[in-house]
Length: 362
Image (cartoon, rainbow, N blue to C red; front, side):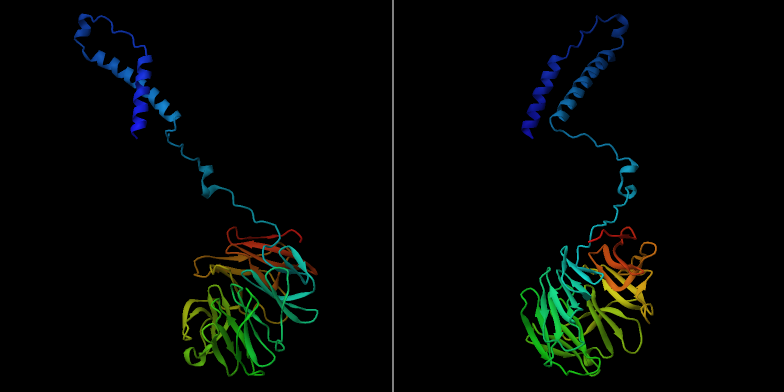
């Protein structure tokens, strides 16, 4: 600060010395009666000096007030960013072909699910299941017939019922088995309902309702005692999707290590649910919309998990969403296969613009 004052002081004197202020005229009698005239002249000279100094200061890095932005420059009036038509950034299937990181994985693929960096799908050619973190395949071995494996929302864990009477949890970060739990093969409705990001596994059937925690010494909790009558449908980034066997709406819930469920938010009446990776947005199909032989839908409902915002995704004219074939890329974009007759394309739907656009061919 001292250096700045010294520079300005020196430049002030240099500017002042360079100014040629005319000498004051000889005062007449009338002028002597008006002594304020010399003061005005001196003040005018001082203003000139200060103006020059201000210009010098600005040129040396001083600041000047920025002009106010015009209305056309404000964020509220800026044109919306168009939805990208680039291929999806997450694994996806199109005409039975699986694409991962821009590469086609050999085979015909169904039932794709994605969590974090991991995908899980069934090879329809021989009905074997695989997972991957990229195009490389990792087979889910020794599966019990007709019981699909389940992926955690963040993609770290895959749980599967083996054909020798054990439920197993595998870690996709290294491919190793974390632990196993005996189960009663052949029990009606028995299957793995959910795997959480903590590696907790929920197994439910007609007689079984178990919370299994393989990373905590294999501890188990009887959910028939801690959460009677509650049916877990899936695990999402915003909590467990749970429905009441007796009555009441479905809901998202947190679960404690002792098996207690705490409601996060009630859900609308729905048939399917997909939650964005950050747990902010969800997309769903209304109750009854997936019944019968429905293979495509004319719209998808979407909204924030907290219920603050909602929208309806509609595919481009003439196209329909292929049933259960939509995946969130992030907390703004959802990608889905759409169909028109026998033709299939991919679309990207944005909650920011509330539009869906056809994507470039892979």
